[in-house]
Image (cartoon, rainbow, N blue to C red):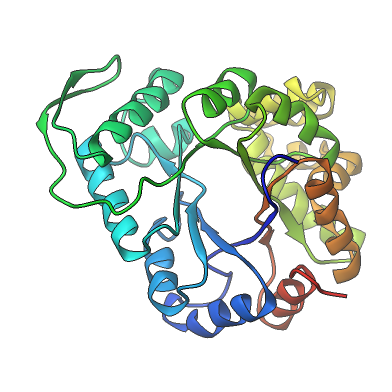
Length: 321
């Protein structure tokens, strides 16, 4: 492993209002977590949970996994990143990515075009803008005329790329500082890491469902899988990893409008490979397998609330027995 191990957790926590997160963040520090990672899709935005953590827990590194490159304009994105860099000097890691047509086009009315080029152009723009340069550039996917960031950035943040397949993973290693991935098994990690390259951070949002009941796993886990694997990019990701046959029946019935039937087509083997489940101790051991395989920053997303959530956060913490 080229990068030192970091112990992250995905926030905000399910069922906890943002204004009630302070105690949870403080406990994460006490438990030895190094990072909190947010996301941005159809719930909270990606930065407000981290802004609160910046003020309440100055020990934590803060990361986005991810901010979509389409849903903020270039200057707006640069200003948001610079603001986070000032709020948490040296502690902010920017994760950006293409997201999906559902989020970008269906929800935000922005054309989802040339995702690889858009991510690449965004990295190049941000490198220049955050360095204080005046940017006038016609990139392949957007143009910027005479922009200079009027915010001093104390330290250039690492720029990580949400990536699933070889081309984007190689971009993450070549022009970014690493990659962010998810919906993979520990056995997949080496395949993914080979594309990113050595000496790059590799963050993984690991889906954790703390249950020992197979019926609950099937009921909740199948919906989790279907929400992602019916997205073309995720379907292609699983095909690349060798699971094309496992997800094809689900996608065929989903495309035909048979949503209930599609869920029934998801095999238990897929749930076992892609979702961490079981007792707290079993979940901890499984998450550690990702780190042993080459994930440098584990960022479990725990699908639980209340006492079950707190028990799992404690079980996954560094040094937990």
